[in-house]
Image (cartoon, rainbow, N blue to C red):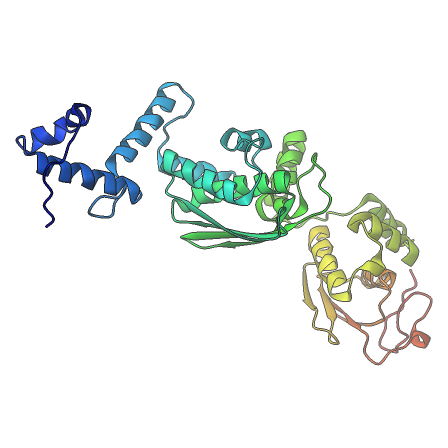
Length: 377
């Protein structure tokens, strides 16, 4: 213990020590010790002896939240109801204006400021979600990894989407990947050079807004989609879903040519066939095949050098099967990769690039083989 005598204290400071003097029955030394302890806690980040946040800050935040509820700026809602609402709207994008109610786009321009502001907002609102960021590049970040930890998983997902939208629109950072676990969410961003402010960046929509386009269409033509879903369910999905031109071609027997297929593919994919790898073509085809529902199932392999597609169907009429084979053969011929086609009852197999050269390809795009059926309509 260090003892000092003849210490002078102005009356104004004695007055400020009055609560501590009253607590310690007028003992000035004890009052000074208590005041020093309180000041030390404040300097250490408002921590008390148990390592918890200082109660005064918690009280201020609680008072602030209560005031916002009273002023109808915020609304109290049970967490179970909130979770239900979030789950039922999963895949829909939050509007920009809603995000900007939380984060002012005119004041937050840098990643450190962004993280600091969001964490301060978290403390104020009591979300219990901590946000950290790792980034490269300066002054404009090239890559960012945003980590959100703790808090309610459903609500953390909403906050993650809000922060992702803000970074996409205000810092030109599109989402490249998303990692979700029960107690942590990680979002990987990469800088994009061109940003259309009227559209949602592709990565953001892919990872957070997968149902956005579908929902807009349902809203636009609700009766159509309600009736369609009802019919599909009643008939156990035993219905076809195809382009009108394709339907006309099947009925008439004049199937679309290879060139027509190539043009249709470019319109559908937004790029010419030659810009895609064979594996990408196969996966696009799989999606289309299952959507059309012309066949019943499909099996694919995209391993390089062993690519194949097996189409499974339940047709028995010979002419139907022949047109079925011709139609899908023209589709594969349009993408520019060599293939052989074999068929058996209820199955057609396309194998790509095995012991073939262009001299084996006929005008129809098929490899001449004795096992092939006739394609004469």
